Length: 344
Ligand SMILES: Cc1cc2nc3c(=O)[nH]c(=O)nc-3n(C[C@H](O)[C@H](O)[C@H](O)COP(=O)(O)OP(=O)(O)OC[C@H]3O[C@@H](n4cnc5c(N)ncnc54)[C@H](O)[C@@H]3O)c2cc1C
Image 1 (tube, helix red, strand yellow):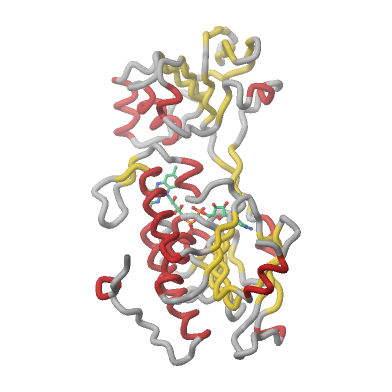
Image 2 (tube, protein in one colour):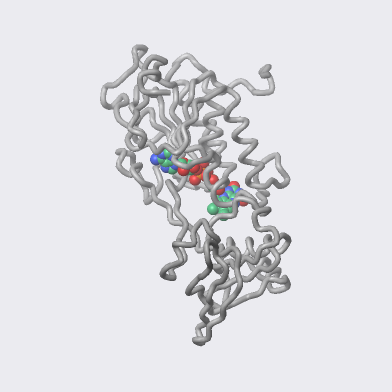
């Protein structure tokens, strides 16, 4: 929707910044409470860390699912979030959040009014804001060897979007943490060969996973680093150098870097919110230091905080409930049970 269309349509009741698990649940819950929502995400897809970092992994601690793969959870969360037809903006970063009651900006009915500037150059208005920006934007830590960058998208990758893409391929995984070990173990079922290269002798992963790894067909190259890659249009081999000084060339179709991610909170640190390290301080209802702005999910902190999908869901429901009472003082904080609603 263009800026003028949006102005014509009026302000949103709530702008949700971030479409990860917490933001998607906040979007759904806002709809359930009769609020018109927009969800904005900097990434090209919804689902936050789950979609971007571990779509193929099993998740065991989301209520109601004995286990669920990341991508299936994202599919269900997106379907749920879309139930009340929110507006969705992808590949759009919120750069500033201006206005609000502290600045004396209120809608005609006296409720707060915020103006959000977007990276697209547009702006939009919302009566309440829920920041569900997780760890901010996240970038993979790239393999340090010079010249490897040119293979990105042509054999070198930092994400596994689908295990099927790896079928029959010779895969070299780099890293020594849980992510590298877990991927190596998952890939043995589909790849033709899996090699794990780690610059130390010891892994920083769950003991049980490391034992499984040592019993698996994964070839281990320890005290070693990938120092070069070569091929024509696509990656064909990598060179590994051991601490001893020896080198080895390995035919390779996919080089998967698992060195972790660097989070970048981006502009959020400048929004005048009370921050603690890279998180926003909230109370138990998700209220931040700026009235009308809430924070939920990984980005929110308070005593005893757990950074889990499950806690993000709960925080989202609480923040939406509180915002509802701000926008409509006669509304009840406690929502009706969804099971007593008749939804199509
Ligand atoms: C490898 C791995 C495995 C995990 N396994 C589990 C598990 O088994 N169980 C569990 O409960 N948790 C697990 N987690 C943690 C879980 O993924 C997080 O707790 C959860 O994703 C947090 O959700 P969120 O919505 O708060 O933030 P995120 O998922 O980080 O989503 C935030 C979104 O906000 C967007 N964003 C950021 N800044 C802006 C901006 N300025 N404008 C617009 N958009 C913005 C980002 O692009 C992102 O999509 C795991 C995490 C990792 C990395």
